[in-house]
Image 1 (tube, one colour):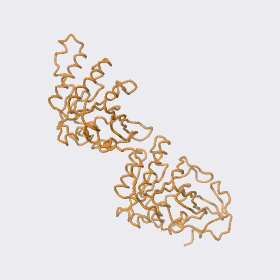
Image 2 (tube, one colour; image 1 turned 60 degrees about the vertical axis):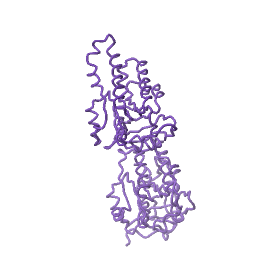
Image 3 (cartoon, one colour; image 1 turned 180 degrees about the vertical axis):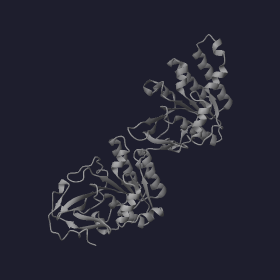
Image 4 (tube, helix red, strand yellow; image 1 turned 90 degrees about the vertical axis):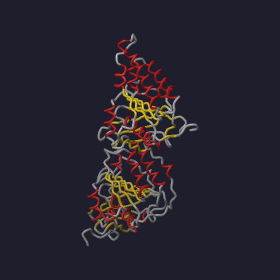
Length: 497
C-alpha cells in the first residue's frame, strides 16, 4: 500500500494470510468471543514491536497487570518490556474527583479515563498500541452514541501519531455479536472464533473480515493456541504451489500389480484403493511405499485407524519390512487422532512433509478417519479436493484408502470421493471352489490406459501376488462375485508352501 510501511503482526501464519503483514499507522479491530485467543495474539503483536526495538503500550481495561502477566507467562513470555496502562490504576488516579463532580459518575469516569490514556500515549510515544477491550468502554459510556463518539475520538487522536493500534473487542456488548459501525471505522478487522464440537477438543479459526488496500487470503483459517502463541494454518490454495516434475509411472515392485495401471500410477496422481474390510487395501498402498523407500524416496503414512505397531507387524508378516526405513528417516508414519486435529492443521502437516522433508509418496489411511475430523461432509469434499490438487501440483503420488460399509454383499461408501481420485483400484472377495478369495481390478485411470481384467489377489508371507486374468464370473455387480470357470487360472492353495 503506497505511503504506508507493512509491519509484521508477530505471527507467521497471520502474516502469510495478510501477504506480509499490516499497513502501519492504522487502526485495526481484533474481535472474538472470550477464550478465542485475542489477548495471546495481541501480546504477539506487541512482542514483535519490542523485538524491533520499538516502544509499545498495552492498555488494559478488562484485566489487571498481574492477570496479563499470567497469560504471558503461560507462553514463556514476559511483559516487563511493555508499557502498561490498566483501568484499576486509572480509577485510583481519579480519586475523589468523581464524588466532587455534579456530572454522572460514569460520565466523569469515561472522560477522565480517556484523558489518562491519551496522556500515557503522549508519554510513551508507542509505535504499537493494544486497547483491550472495547466492551469495558461500552459499559463506561452507557449510551451507544457516546460510545461511538469516543471510539471515533480515539481514532482521530491516534491518526495524528505514528502508531499502529489494535482495538480488542470480546463482542459481548454488541448486537448479534457484530458491530458494523465499528467495522466501518477501522482500517481492518480480524475475527477469531472458538467452535465447540459434540466430541473432541474445541476448534478455533480466524478470518480477515476486511483490510483496506491489501490483497489478503480470504476465508476461514484454522489455528490452535500452543505454548508460544497462536499457531495459524493459512487456508491451502493448491494453485499457489505448482512445481515442475516429470509425470513418470511409479513402480510397486510387483510387475503384475504395475501392469494393472500400465506401469503404475503416474507422479502427481492420486489412487483410491477401495473395498471391504480385510481385502488388503492398506497392504497394496504399503507395497508402493516399500518400493519408494527402496528407491530412496521419502514417504509418509497418515494413520487414522490402525495403530502404528500393528501396521508394522502386519507389513513384516507380508514380507514388507518397513522398520528399517522408519529408523533411517526415509519413512514417517504419523498417528492422527481425528478428534484433536482440524483440517487446516492436517493440511499444514502434509505441506511440511512435502516441502520440508521432500516426501514423494503420501498415504491417507483411511478417509473414514479423515472424515471424522470434519464437522460437515461438504467441507470434507472441498478440503479433500484442494489437498489432492496440492499434492498433484507437487508431483506427489497419493494413495487414499476408503473402506466400504459392510463385509459381504452389496457394499457402499459413506464418502463419494471417487471423482476426486485419478485412479480407482477395487478389491473384492469372491467365491470359488467353496473358498473365499480376493480379486483386484482397476475401475478407472485418468492418467492413461489400464487393464480391465479381474485378477486374483493373494497377500501372504510371500508378499503381494496377482494371478492370471479371470473371465468367468457370476454376480460381479452384487459385490460378492462367484468364479465359475476352470481351476487352472486360480492361484495355489493358501496352505501350500
